[in-house]
Length: 202
Image (cartoon, rainbow, N blue to C red; front, side):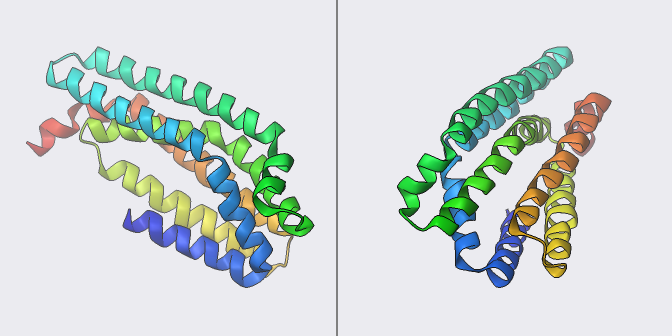
């Protein structure tokens, strides 16, 4: 949480400093609009952690792996569907929250499109990350969070802002963040290293 909150603070500071209040407000409103999908992802993260831990505790390693992949596929499917429904209504929802401020509405709509494209990747991050933590492999998700959020999202955002590119470029750095995290987490889960992580600690 320390890494996440620091990264979010840095990212939002870049948006506020370089692009003003409309872009800053758009980020916050867009995130709130997509909270329904994120709550679902949190549920699958908890489910994956619980089921993987239970199966490993019972000595059923194959069942633990199946539970992790199932949580991932269901999270991606559910979050993609919710994200699609929000994206196709992005402009109307933005106007509902922001009224007649056309600049803020446009920024929010752009950000919502990007978040909608990112949600399947977030589903992988949440479900597989939760499954790894349930297996006792907690350090690897921490490392992916640091590399993705600080090393990719904030670094790309700072680069785009320094070159005075439109704020949509800064928003799009979120996709790079979750592409890296999702790829690393899938690799880790497929490697099977997590199957013995808790036993090594004990």
